[in-house]
Image (cartoon, rainbow, N blue to C red; front, side, top):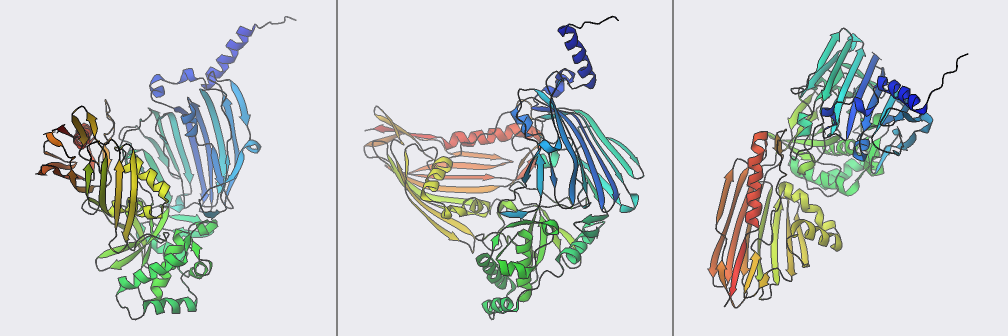
Length: 633
């Protein structure tokens, strides 16, 4: 018999040829998809089969070539599971840059952890891949199959899941029972070719060759990233059937199924709250009393157990235990208000510092938070029931200016939460400082903050002295070297609400002395140094989510023995993005008065406006660094 002899080089050639056919070598990635990419999705394929309103199977396969650690962090290699969501299979295979298999990780090799909810209680766990790459680049093939009885949530298809991640091919296929009332809606595919195949009970979606999206400051990614949302008219959630074709019917289902019967309170609690209310008849004043009672009695704990992830705890249980999650505490407050004759409604919302709307044009399970709304003539008073210190009716930037779904006994209704105008988001600084002949500065200022600027600061009074010292030096007075804070006092008026800070400070060598001259920056207490990043070719529109108004008036006492050689000119800048003025007045031989205003306008702007906005902020930063030159007599 003829015995074939293979040299090592020939074996390597055969091996690489086989892997090349499977297209796992990085050489198969188009150059345009490597550009700016931390990882490339070679293939993302999701198959969803909905056999009934109580049965959904999700099969996923994802092949991703990873170029660096950041890219690996962005690859989702895990699956959640709980009592109603089962992981049928999960595995991963690692390949090197040439497409050769390096390691196979089976289900038994995945790590398990509880899903963190902060200070919370949850029955949800996760299987996740624990793998330390030997070298980059490498390719990972991750596959899983999950079965769930919950069909209220069909995960949206987001072919571009992260920045700096390009996509060679992404597919989403969904098979469903037509009688369940399946619907879908796509968003933001203007620059991507979305391929669709539809037939009864079947939808296939795909897109190919999507270059990596770079990060750009102020980009409203949630408003521009491509996605497709899905839902059923007839669905199932944690043992409860539901049916909704619009937001009105969704709200009606939520109220009657998840809220009804949860508002019973112990008789002694009802008697206690009525005693606290006394003879008060004004609904809002009653609500203030109830809100303070809730804040004093309860604390927030996240509850994610079965239907408890969506259905509030009973009000009587919250009353007994003294804790609850956002749904439980909102519902508890609603129950107390009901006991004293005040109407209020639970409202589903996305809670986040970055604004995010519940989509008004597509009905499905949305939101991650619950607040309470109290009708007050033609307005709504919003209550954040999870906070023990937030002022009554104050939202701040966690729930402001976004669509929320109010749940009334009759229906659901989408409304926008409070929009803070720039005239509400104010900071007023009034103060003085004295400059000594050696350059030392001693000063005192009073800063009054309202609106979202209050929201930024009202927690300061709870901080330690050391934390405050670091915060002030790094955030507000980082332009002053050798800073020493001699006094910080707070007056928190929760009725308005507004925070007043009184700060006394000093610093050596604030004024720079050279020969017979001294030079110092006039704006010591509220300097804006921020200049947006420059982009050679901006791709995205940009958004200023919130406007504000700053107003400063500072009296400066000059050192004895010096005269003024040079003063900054008065400045006035007006653009569509806002306005800036700075004026320096000579009050007498050794006293200056510095007046400054800076207002910024919220808005969504075209990418072509970005350079102008950058120039606007650059001018402000330059003028905030304007200097006075003194000459020794």
